[in-house]
Amino acid sequence: MIVATLMTGLAAVLALADPVAPPVEAVIRTTRGDIVVALDPQAAPISTCNFIRYIQADRYRDARFFRTVVRETNANPNPIDVIQAETTAGSDDPGFGPIALERTRDTGLSHVAGTISMARDGPDSATSSFFIVTQDTPSLDFGGGRNPDGQGFAAFGRVTEGLELARTIQALPATDEQITSPVAIANIELRGPVPAVCGALAGQGAE
View 1 (cartoon, one colour):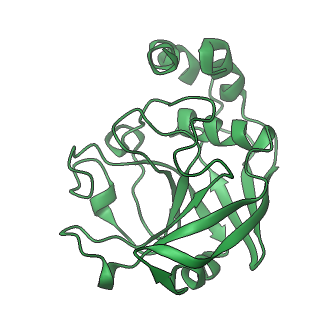
View 2 (cartoon, rainbow, N blue to C red):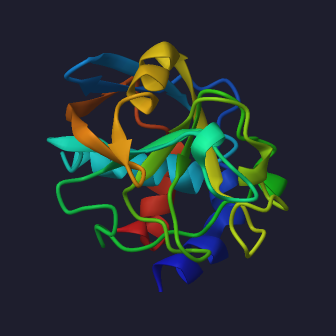
């Protein structure tokens, strides 16, 4: 229901987007340091506003980076380089419900090094779990082979500070992609005003 409502009103919502709106950033505060991400509500409003909604609800407090995937050891025909985070409810946290998948075909974004993107199973299933790409990984884009459905993942921003920290986390000891000692996220803080498009999306039924 949420997905259908969001897609129905998306065209009207995008018309409200301000091309000169002030930048909005998220600061991921971990026990190893901060990672700063510039969000992209212009290109990916649904994913960005969903992420902001979890921040505002304090749902990322005591979250953690729990998963690391390293291309060289990834037993997959389309290997990737990422670290993945989850809330205290886990990577399958139902949270506020699933959101529509914003395909890179439509947003114009791509999974280059530093990209933040939504984790998912099937299309339109992402909730709160996200990942950071540490090296260019086009197989995560629309048409890429990482997910068998070929729909790719929803990129919605880019790391501006702390990419080396993300790579350090990626290199931590792990078993079957599960980090032996997960890196705690104290909280995620928003810098800058909430984009106007987020209020419009909420009015379309995102809450």
